[in-house]
Amino acid sequence: MEEWTDKEIQGFRKALLDWYDQEGRHDLPWRKKRDAYGTLVSELMLQQTRVDTVVDYYNRFMEALPTVEALAAAPEDQVLKLWEGLGYYSRARNLQKAAKYVVNDLHGNWPQSSDDLAELPGVGPYTAAAIASMAFGEVVPALDGNMYRVFSRLLEIDADIAQPKSRKIFYQAVAPIVDPEQPGDFNQAIMDLGSSYMKTKNPDTLHSPVKEYNAAYRDGIEEQFPVKSKKAKPVKVLYQAQVTRRGEKLLFEKRPAEGLLANFWTFPLKEINSVEDLAGEQLHIKPVVHVFSHRRWEIWLTAIDQAEPKENQRFFSPEEWQALSLPKVQHKLIDKLHEVDDVSEH
DNA sequence: TACCCGTGGCG
DNA sequence: TCGCCAAGGGT
Image 1: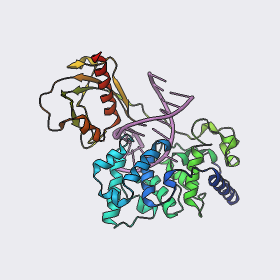
Image 2: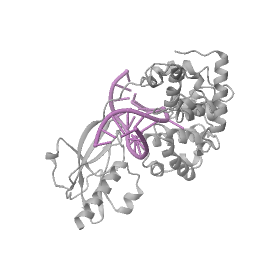
Image 3: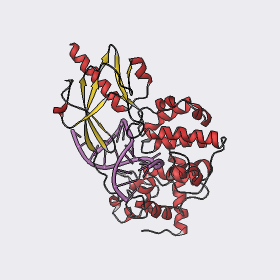
Image 4: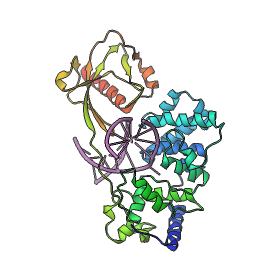
C-alpha cells in the first residue's frame, strides 16, 4: 500500500479541489443548497442507483414534499408513488421513518454528527458520513463505491471491496487525506472523479487531474484495482401469473409485508416447477423475464377465472391501479397482457 | 458473514 | 443475450 507525505496530501487536496471547482457537477439539484433534508433524500435515492436516474425522481419528490415536516405528514402511498420504479423500496419507507423520527422525536432538530445520523433508518456508515460532511462540515470520508475505487488505485490498496471488513482499511487510509477545511467538497469531488476520469470501465487516467498521485497507474497495474470478488448469480424462479378479469377490472394480490416487493400489488403469482405445471390458458410463447439482484423471475401469464377474491386480493379498475405504486415487474406483466389482447383482436 | 433487497444502462 | 455494474443498508 502506498503512503503519502504531508506535502503530498496537501498537493492532492489542492489538485482535487481546484479541479472540482472548475469541473465538478455543480448543476446537480441536490447540490444547489446543502440542507440536511435535501441531502438525506438525495443520498437515499442515490444508494446503488445512477445519478442520471435519480435527478428526475429527486426533483419530483422535493416539489411534492419540500420539507421534512411535509414528508413526515405524508401518506405512505404518496411516498411510494413518488418512488415508483426506483427500486429498493425499503429506502422509501425508511426515508419516511427517518423524517418522522426527526420531526416527532427530535422536534425538527437534526442529528449533526455522523454517529448520530447513522441512527436514522436507512442511514448507514456511508450515508451518515456523506450528510455529516456535506450538510454539517464534519471531517469524515464518505466511503462509497467511488471512494473505494479511487483510493484503491491511488494507493494500491488490494483489500477486497466486496468484503465489509475492508471498510476499516480504507477508512484508516483515507481519513487523514480528507480536507479539514472542505470535507463535503472533498467527498463530492472524489465521487465526481470516480464517475469520470476514474470510472470502473475505460478510465481516462491520462487526463485525470490527480494522475501524478495514482500509484497503480504509475506502475501500469491500474486494471488490477479495485479488487472485488464476484457475486452469486441470481437464482431462477418460475411463476404462473393468474389473470382473472371482471370486465375492465383485473384481480391483484397484495404481497406479504416482508421480503421481496413487500406489500406491493401484483397479479396472483404461483410458483411452478416447470412449464408443464401451468393450469389454465397459457397466453404467450416466451416468459416475461424480470431480474432482481438475487432472483431471476420467469413468469407465464395465464387466463383463469377465479370466482371470488381471497382475503389478500382485490379487483382494480384501470383508473385504480394506475394510481397505485406498482413495481416494474407488474407493469411489464400488464403491458404483456395488453400486447396479447391486441394480437387476439386482429 | 452471507444473503436479502430493484432497476436500467452498457459492452 | 448476458453478466456486470451504480453515491448501500438491514439482518
